Length: 60
Image 1 (cartoon, rainbow, N blue to C red):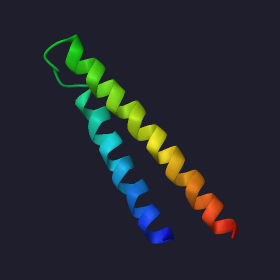
Image 2: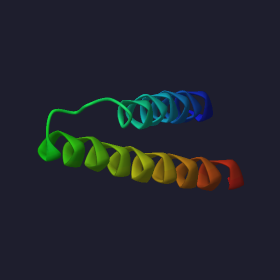
Image 3: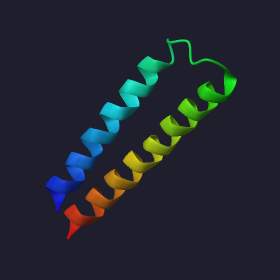
Image 4: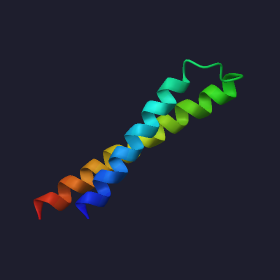
């Protein structure tokens, strides 16, 4: 279970990095910028949740 959660954390962090790099591109308008930022926030929240779940599982 820990390995699966760690894998999800790594994948989400890679996607956040990709989206952050995308900030430097011309996103074709403000709506695309907002969508990109929204996706970053969503992934950061997922990472936090995965890390909390991992912490809870590790305590048992």
